[in-house]
Image 1 (spheres, rainbow, N blue to C red):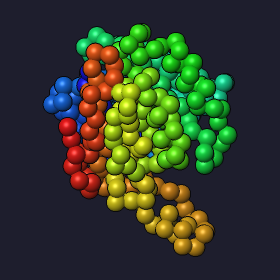
Image 2: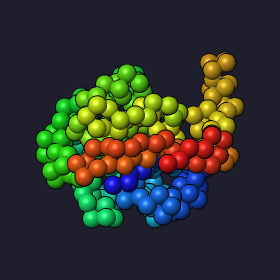
Image 3: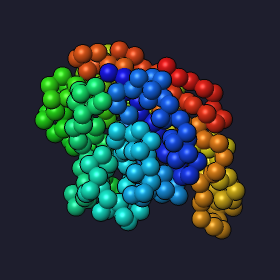
Image 4: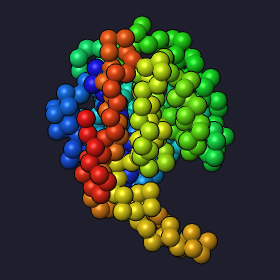
Length: 269
């Protein structure tokens, strides 16, 4: 299978990058399944139902969320109506929606997508992500019910993401980190066939401070004093993520970083 995962969509610029590039990439790269992390797509904080529809119409088969999952209040209702939206498994026991779901790809094969939140350096104490994912792996083993498994691990610490990657090796097709909005350069296939990338980066304007217009973050770093709200940067955005090919057993055979448009150096399969 040919899989594409795109990192955190950041505001209007990120949404524009998705609509500008993803329909063409689906055809050019013969993509069977596409996952987009959309948790910052609406004003940099959360995802609205309208913007979720836009990402899905542009070619996403599944949209994952994150720690800002329900910052846009209509997502509390929309996620119950739209099965292609995935929130973190360990967000809250009272949260609506699902943290893992089995999808049918365009080639007819089954793809499991699951998301979990990390614990290190996060603002809220979330439940253990390893235990949450263990249940998913037991009920949907790779090569059994699932022809491919994609794990979105949304957290701050690179060490926690690396630990999760090794723990998922042999049980997932791809374990990719999100949340920090900066793409890492460590795309690799682990020893048991799990494709791994510490962070997919963001789909947004990199002439910014992790996607936000520069003035207010700079002011806060320099003076320690806030003056106004952060606002997403609106320049030309880079589509950032990772492309993975899998064999018949669901294990990765190829991984390539993806950077398309905007300021970052182009990288594609």
